[in-house]
Image 1 (cartoon, rainbow, N blue to C red):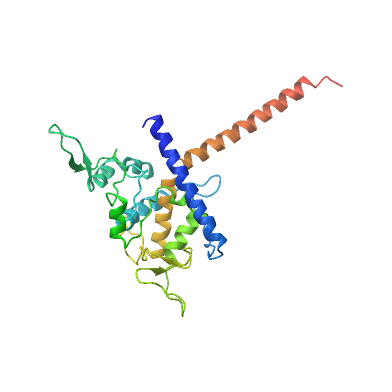
Image 2: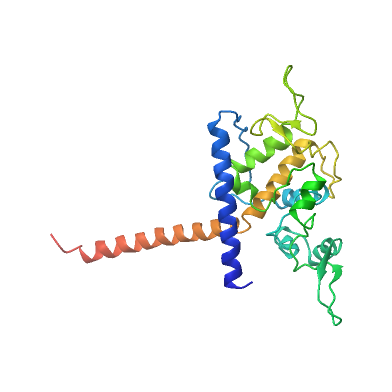
Length: 260
């Protein structure tokens, strides 16, 4: 990927996050947002890391439930090797999707199975098609969703487990669902998770809470795949500074030892 492409992606990400932050702040200002419960995530803290089992289960949830509506445009299939999938597994996962490529020798575009180097295939060809399939609502891309929402991981988990029947007397328009953690409490997305909605390959019980936790972990990784490397570098820098401070102090004591 060229430097200009990286700059364009960073710029688009910044605009997306800024817009999401403005909307989030406006919703909070209205006083209509319930603070999501705090959860202990393995990736929190200075020494936090991603649970590989949870990441792989989270991909299963995204691929089996979320990918039908939500794109993940900043992630390539080969990136899945970073969370424990083998090259053969990634090749098989990618080949289940088709991408448009070309032109061929005759100058025509053609469809081919996706490759590990391809980014995740979008569920819809364009925004209009996405809205037409979702009663006018546009399912947002999830690549940076954990960063785009305040208290992102806790919010996403609460959102996916916060569907319930509306209180007595509260009307919910047709095509909307009641969710106490969504600003305004009415959301166009129906509850995406149901008990045993996916069959985990590691035989973990697929409860709604488990699936919400796993897919949130996966989306947190998608938003910050460099998180573990950044933390490791930070620890190394701190250790280096501690050693350097000790050396400087020892040198200072030696130089000034004979000065009275």
